[in-house]
Image 1 (tube, rainbow, N blue to C red):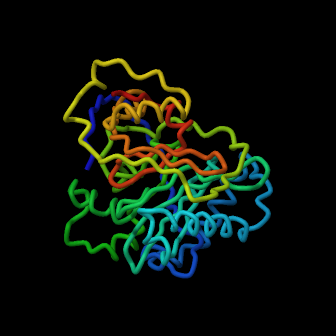
Image 2 (cartoon, rainbow, N blue to C red):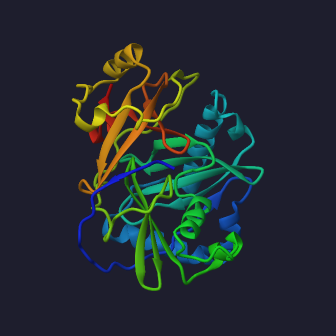
Length: 319
């Protein structure tokens, strides 16, 4: 798992938790969807409640969202590294009040192989905010289960199937923006926060400040094949220019392309949760689509593709 540099702050705020579960799937269902299928109506009520404060745009129909996800899956499945997506099924879940977004986990023969994060746009279409491959997809209940056992917050004797059905453990997915994604877990009235990708226990005492305030304007149209630049991974802790060094002045995709041409060991660093956590990640390259969509490729418990412009806004790159 990724290592963290952590600064803790002392603040105690009691916040209620909300259990969020998958709502829809493609040809098959994930294990946690089947285990909690009886709670589907509760999840639907959650969506209805989340839209009360700020109405959703006209999303046309669930069919449109399903079609968008299926299209992205099919296009990505033709790219190197995404071969397991060709036969994968997917399940989706809402990301919580005010986000107008959904998470998607892809499963191939019972094994988690990737994820997508989707948000509604102003005109009622959808934007692919980020995606990734590997067996640690964003908001994986499998990863969370392992972390809770390792932190001795639940007994190791509790099997996974019993964990996903245990309604006394309250779960809430909190997605603020790319790289700010958190599991909030409430056990015996005590709240714990875990990174939604790595499963690391975070030093948070309250929910992160929401940052997703405006809907994206344009939809994501992936036209392939993509131009993919990929370098070998490395441990960002082997070299520490990001501790005292000066970040590269990168604001445009072309500048990142030039920097990757000069060095195959660039580190992306972002400060999270008001400076409580510094997260350094190896930059593996980027993926550029014919439509102009560009995603930065990071090594974060698997390949993580985040929109390049968002990443350059939220963090810095070091050589």
